Image (cartoon, rainbow, N blue to C red):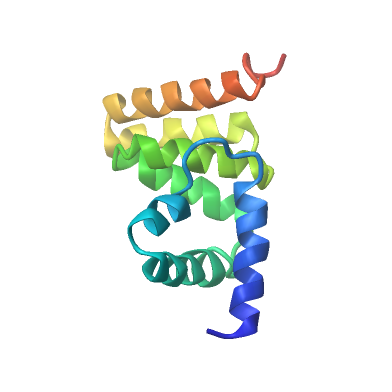
Length: 130
């Protein structure tokens, strides 16, 4: 892997994972296979998430929408925190989650909103607009 990808991985991981207290995917992967963890991190963080075709805010709002529809709550929790780190507002995330109702149904939307509320409470950002 090139030095450029390594630097992009470090930069993107630093932006995305700052202040994340929950288990990080890299740490989980590394506990099972250090080499695989490195390969996954270099690809996912250094190549996929580091792409500059769309802004990080847009990328995270898309990720929140997909994870909501798929009801992947653990991963959603992580990406809500990442979205805050890249400048997404609670209102933007809530709107994206509401939009997914049409495609994922109200149970998925409600579970995602509960997750958003929980993260915002932990970050002292709840209630919205206080």
